[in-house]
Image 1 (cartoon, one colour):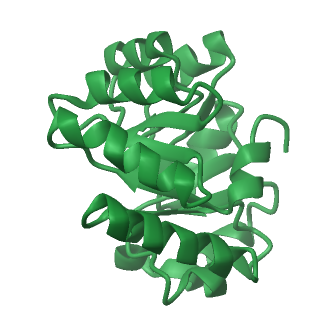
Image 2 (cartoon, helix red, strand yellow):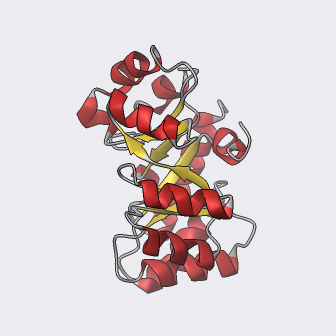
Length: 203
């Protein structure tokens, strides 16, 4: 799908929470060296904009986006910083409009048929299903895709190395968002990222 090629290529997008700015580059280094030059850096911490800026400056070719974007001000700031995609925990019409204006991929969070219909009415047919494990996981995704065969889904929340292959086996899943590889020391993040890449690529 146009604009979503990187999601399909990587199959897993690390969801990164940076609480201290000094963790930004070591975390990004570990992901890139582990074979996954991608990150959804969440906007939920004070240092998130600075962390995104540093990550993009060091790795301009990496697929770096902003997560937990809940209003147009955050969205505009993230785009100015150079984010290549925007993710929200829910669906925001104003965020969708900003992304459309700038030609940026937007993944709104949905869990109900009504929210899927709203996303489709905004011209969005790739959505985030969040929090996946709390809302029935793969079974619910398959049920939702019945009446909406045109959508693709990126489940996030409760995804791990234990269940990601089950999700990816479904042709409606474009990629999964996961944070399990982002926990621990840079060395641990590197090792878990390497394992995650091997897992999703079947090596």
